[in-house]
Image 1: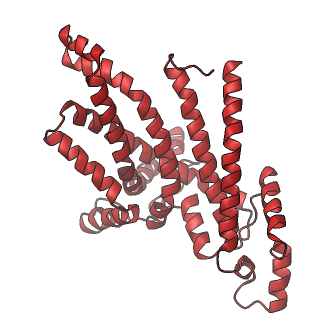
Image 2 (image 1 turned 60 degrees about the vertical axis):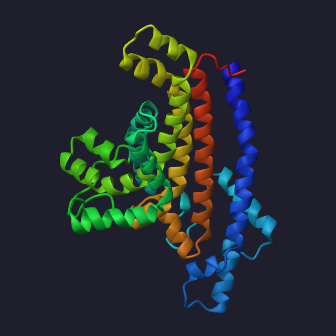
Image 3 (image 1 turned 135 degrees about the horizontal axis):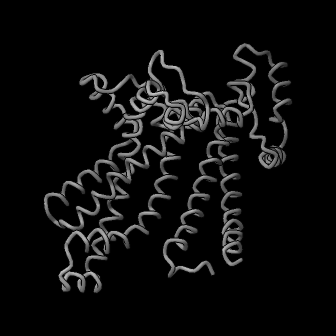
Length: 338
């Protein structure tokens, strides 16, 4: 019961945040230059046809009424219609969402898989060459924009070394998608035993996931390093050293285990960052996810997909933070939901 009340209270606290996000993103897209009706009607539409299209799309209504129609549509599962594709945005999102999830999960695995050991080594070998290398990698990941890292990867690994495939989509030329189970090509290929598609999907995933993951290595490594340094200076670790326990046992069993809780926090934050930042990477690699969809909508001044993308990222961040808070209590018994 305490757990249920805690989750309910956290949901209630998230509602004002989501309301604020909906107001801000609707206002910003409302103020964008351009006319979505013109995108739908085409460049050769007559003024009468354009006015009729604006009336059909509700663009001739006052701002509060348009916002009310937008919010009430969300509660009904209606995210509006894309003026570019002519289809409901919800259908386009469902079609493209697996590609984005596959890219983000692979990037998160890379960030944790490299950032976690890098942070541990930097803390254990403080102020040595290993620590300095870890700092340089972290600074590079944060300082370099994702689009620049992506273009550099394409130039080096595809153009110069010919180690990566062309940055065009989720599968190589002539490769058929696997039978649909989850929509994630790597998972579906494993489930159906389609090894040719599995190799192609992993090959295509390599560069975009590496690009997005590199930018997320730094926060993970820095969090692990600072937490490990604090734990290694604690009394119970000093007692373990004094008791003569093996170095591996003290570092990887006693210290690292207690350093994993902040890693869960930073992983949730990183996942939200990846969800928001994947739009540029998806555009560079022609990755058919919702980020690429939003960028295309922004270029064509198609407001409904932009609003839906911003709202989706906000909801994802709120849900991930809620899951992290719940995981805290389940992992650390000292934390109580009350």
